[in-house]
Length: 130
Image 1 (tube, helix red, strand yellow):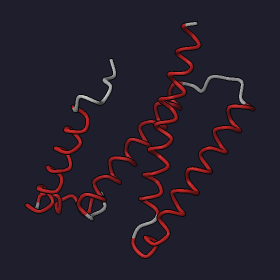
Image 2: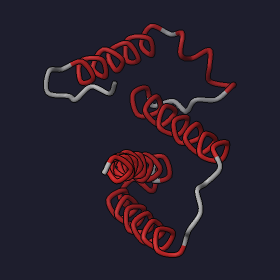
Image 3: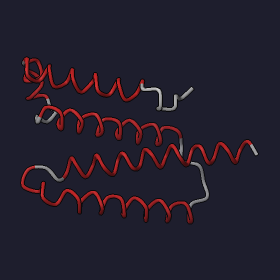
Image 4: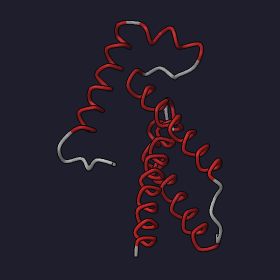
């Protein structure tokens, strides 16, 4: 029974990660002149994620190596973080724009974003990971 619970838990965590990835990739890609197509882009990302996940689940019979999973999660985290910073400040995260994040307006926006994230994370209704 315990391995089944671990598999279900792992599947739920992976699905949440894939949902966040689909949304953040859609937002990162559909900016600027592509903004009107954001809804269609996120829908396409979700459909592609679902089809790919179902295909891999049905045809794969091995455990993905730990370094591959770690690299995938690190890259996904970077995309989510850089997308959130771009959405909060309107500036892409790159070497050429690092100095712009020290300006008072950017510091204020990033501070408010982190305060909001901490509020959401620490609210009583959010389950805690132990």
